[in-house]
Length: 288
Ligand code: AMP
Image (tube, rainbow, N blue to C red; front, side, top):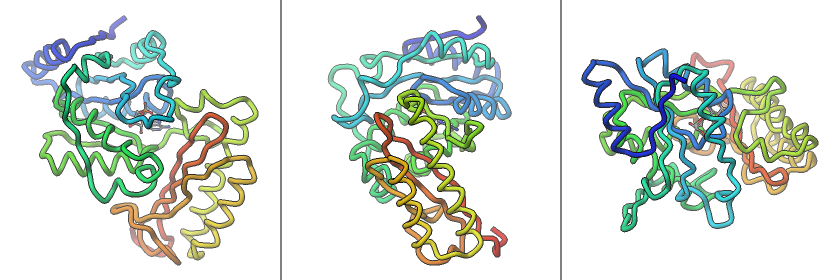
């Protein structure tokens, strides 16, 4: 196995320092493990920029709400290590909760505005916990690049915001959503779906595609969203946390006819899984 796994910040830093001394560029891909092709698409994108790729695997307790799936979240480190080794990743950083949050830990982070809506509204405190752990990982590894998926588009926007605000010296790179052949966005939480739910789950990407298609051709968005909500609900999703179209840059809610780059976002629960997805809407009559 060419992959090395370290469990402590000290070992992570020692390895990265050696690479830096050799003048190598380093990329970090933070994950919660239960790896799939979507994660690996980010390691491949990382490889186009950097000489050495680190993947962190850490199920971060502070970004889960009290009624969410922290305890049940799949933890599959041996399988993840095989996948990372096959993908040519050099280093896996898999710290314990105690390593990341030693006793006495008391620092929180909050990002205004961008976190009030979408998953921020549906999951209070989620983005504070995410920002806390991503900041720690960036300061621990001090990579040249850090890669995040557009699958979690709001998360990517929040990360870009605090990295800029806090002058963290890293380039943030977003990667496109990797999908199953039938359109379902890959996710570690897809493992929660029964075979029947797995079929139903394709409803989300089908509804988003149809909305994207029609909104980009100039249809007013309110009726499209109303129809979309009905389709998602009648497929068996409940509750639907949101189905909204927002500005692709500042995430402001959009109305009427789309006249600038936008994004349609959905989050809805199917059985035990809360699924999210999003797609870009580029107005057909713009040069955007
Ligand atoms: P997670 O392990 O779910 O926290 O995801 C770790 C990183 O992988 C995040 O930056 C996600 O946005 C990204 N990611 C998850 N699923 C996908 C996917 N289907 N396509 C691209 N990136 C993804």
